[in-house]
Amino acid sequence: MLFTVDAEGYSIEIGSLLDGSFDSLMIDNYSESKKIIVVDENTNEFCLDYLITNFDCLKEAEVIMIPAGEENKLLDICAQVWLTWDEYKITRSDVVVNLGGGMITDIGGFMASLYMRGIDFINIPTSLLSMVDASVGGKTGVDHGGIKNLIGVFSNPKAVFIDPLFLSTLPEGEFYSGFAEMLKHGLIVSPTHWYELSALNDVQQEINERHIYSSIVIKNEIVHQDPFEKDERKKLNFGHTIGHALESYFLEKDPISHGYAVILGVLCESFISFKRNYITMDEFSEIERVIVKHYQLIDLSSEDYTEIIRYMKSDKKNRNNKIFGVLLIGIGEAIINKEYTTNEITDAFDYLNRVYSELNN
Ligand SMILES: NC(=O)c1ccc[n+]([C@@H]2O[C@H](COP(=O)([O-])OP(=O)(O)OC[C@H]3O[C@@H](n4cnc5c(N)ncnc54)[C@H](O)[C@@H]3O)[C@@H](O)[C@H]2O)c1
Image (cartoon, rainbow, N blue to C red):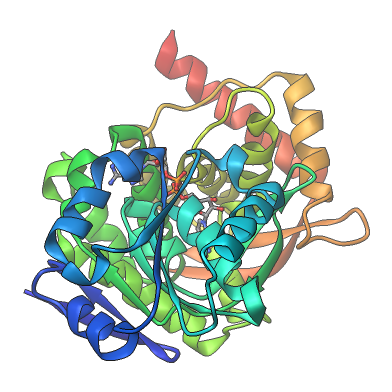
């Protein structure tokens, strides 16, 4: 069965690539074009064969392989790839197919959007996180100076094709990284989605196309209301004020996945919401129960606290040394532009450490 979502100027298909419109899109629009497939080492190994074997239109495609990992989502890599595209004599009528996780859809979309002031690109996300989040919504970009997504452009793909088959080779930790963003979607706007996901036990086995579809519908609806993140879209940043700072901080030491950083941020920002009486004890306990069921927590030192807060203050979304974020006012309801004090963040980290000790001693 195929699910389809209409996004701003492009469509998102969820279901087997073989049943969908990928082939006809390529034949109708790009039969004379050069095709470039952007992969990383892992999607080169696990996903590329499937695509090339099943679609004749890609038999002659040039494959660009980028080293895997967030630490490679960099302008230097783009500069090297652009030189290769020069050698291939890529023109504006050619097309880039991004086959990978969020790192590849972010950097691949960014490279395509800037090259010759923009060539078409299509996303085929292969991680759960890129399926439900990164490949949808038009944000492309790279990290710079140690700051996540500092350089980027809003630019929509021509289409997104989501085939859950690719999830079969995704490592477990990466799977839960994507699940974190799905839980977040439920918490910010949809109690139904939250309760459906929170009832899953063996998430990897039980998750299905309909869950993925529901998450995409939520993200797409928010992006539709506010494509350039003036207000409503900021809700998607729930968990990210603290999450991004954790991700940036650990990137230099011992990288943690985007979704894992986000779920720790979700827990801390839910704690702040609870402490402000925005959500009840029962609501907070329910959030804690689900997160602790699926995720190992982390033990932070006071040195870590200082550095992570420093990252928050330098986040591009913040200003005047103040830290702003999104808080919950219920399960399925969020409120934007809330300032967090350093004390509140420190208390949330203390809480994280307390739960970590209780669970590990
Ligand atoms: N643009 C947006 O709106 C948006 C939203 C959320 C996250 N992001 C970005 O997405 C990135 C995180 O995405 P991610 O978690 O997918 O990271 P990722 O792309 O680094 O993928 C995680 C790991 O899984 C591997 N992988 C991917 N698909 C695989 C498969 N099918 N089989 C085996 N291995 C596979 C990758 O090679 C990588 O090692 C971050 O850069 C984040 O900033 C962007």
